[in-house]
Image (tube, rainbow, N blue to C red; front, side, top):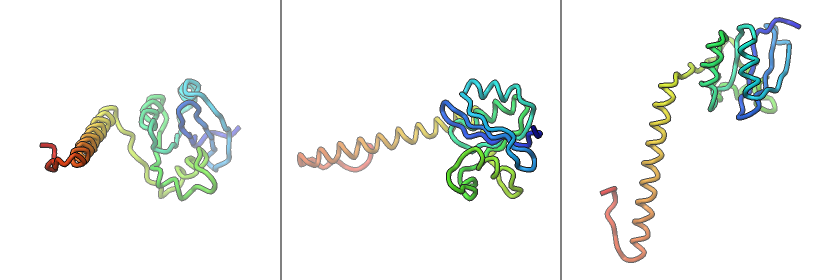
Length: 152
């Protein structure tokens, strides 16, 4: 078995697909692991480069894997797309991560993620409020009442 150069990880909610590749690109292993198994496997695995698409849980896993000593490369989804032959998977991520011109996403801290969540939640609440006001205005108009535009 060759030395692992990079591990491509396809993150999902419950099952993670891993592809270990040697420095020359030869496949060393393929694994399908549960969330708990993945954490244990990566904690016990010697430090290496781990590539994954920057998706919903990627920043969390980047922090976890960095704590285990791995070098994590998060790939923006639109940079992975040119390497897709049939479907996007961990092999595609690993191949994309080995390209010298590939640009990576910096993993977010928990504080950065929390601010982003608060911002998106606020945006969504404002959008829902506007929708509710517009719907109420339309219903009032059906009864002949014209309400002025705006929140006031």
